[in-house]
Length: 114
Length: 113
Image 1: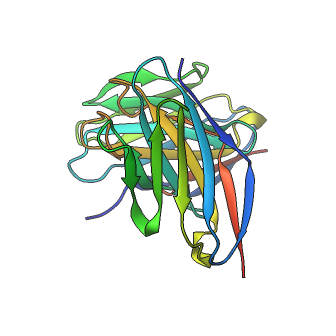
Image 2 (image 1 turned 90 degrees about the vertical axis):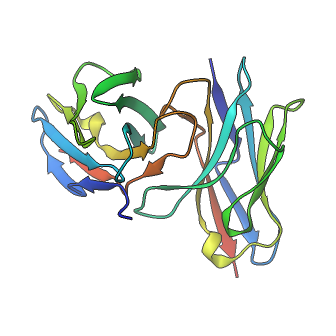
Image 3 (image 1 turned 180 degrees about the vertical axis):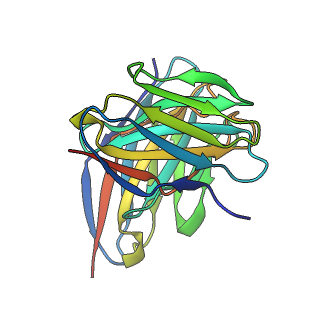
């Protein structure tokens, strides 16, 4: 069965500092991986996705993630945090032809200090 | 292009009642998925509909049901509400339901008293 583990339910960084949100997955077949962001009282917005093309994936708002099969990881990074990045971030995995079925991690709340 | 629209945005029900939530996908999208989001359980997949057929189902009791109409609009129903059904219910649509981007609505927040 597929699963996703996000390390750290809450991460706090200073404005301008590196953002690193960790995600590890478990899958018996090549996975498709996603990062979503959720702002308060809103739905989820796709930041980026990995679908077996380039292992370094660039997304919106300056975020990127690297797929590392040997480490079963898909960590999300941003070189310089902005106040507007404060939100909850979810890593998710989809396998094969499961269509709209995603398995989400528990989420990481990112706080950005001025 | 209009996004995914969910109605109602907020609602309050009492235990034992039933509720119907509606989702209008992005025009042209044929797949609609539903998720339940709670602080304790996080985001959990309920079911997915494609061309009016349920294609995938999560691990929820039979009190949770859904359907999709010919115009791709979808409804989900929860009968005999329990306190634990209080949650944000999110609908997501995609073009084909293959491994592509899901577009989420803002959700319907259900409170069961």
